[in-house]
Image: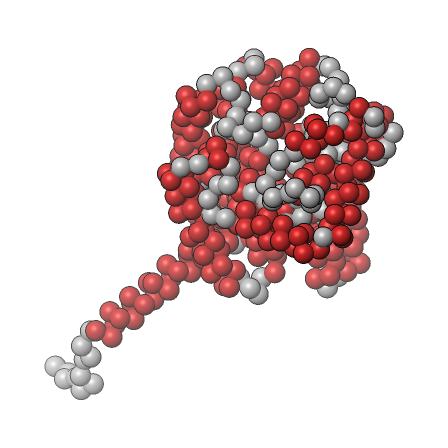
Length: 424
């Protein structure tokens, strides 16, 4: 085994131990409860039960059949099939998934830069307090982050790898399939495929070839999601590739009583599901949200600023994660990460794909959640690829410090006389 592989195994072992330790701590803290953040976890758990039992993929009464995408509930169903309905076992499975996310960061860093950058980035994800802590919560962030990073690695192999030769359209297909897999965990990643294709065609010198490859990638993305869209057409009569929850989520961020924080009591109070179809409810809330923004542009801008602050804020906004300790730990990791990523961005400013595939997701989600709801939860998956850029920044800072010390040492040494005596 090479030295680099030994270091990688060591870093991944540390990542797994930290996450298993976090699983124990969280389990001791909340006991039989599923998650520190109520609501989402219970829904995911119930859907996993239904998948395992072969029941209808639906929640609540009246049933919401297109309320969630199936990716994360399917993972929990697999844990239930192997270990029963043990939330501690599910945390263990998620700890493994989080460790695989660290491995995906290594692969991305190695592909974009070199093995040293990959190992450094993997190390950053291994010790991140937020990444380790969220890894063992019954929430979709960790699985989504791993699949998102995997899709970026496939994109890097496609767009920056060696010529295709015998591999044909392997990497465009893999990119589309991985984007689809990530989207089936969190719908917000769906637009990454079209955006990536546009950048690829725009930057390519051989636009005809890249246009065809982008079309192949897009077909793979749509084809991978087609079974879910087909199922949704069967249950609601419309081709829905993600969910019918985007309307209420949008209204959550844009309505008269919105504060920038998620508070969806309006959905239960209005009970539109009792008199409308799931599709009509989604369209109703979507229309009302945009009407509010158009009628109250200054308040909409104010809410945008609040949501962006919640997105970029170094410490968690949720009260469940309150306390000086957790806030300090998360902040002391994220702020330097951002500084080193900015340094890395400066050094890689000539390499478009490096900074787009590492910093791009962070800005992409910032734009989306400036409209919906801002939170550290939605930023966290983008921090995984950002660790690659931060590793570049750390490496360049170390080189600058080394050069500075070397120059000072060379200047402090006495200069030898130019005249030399030759002894026979």
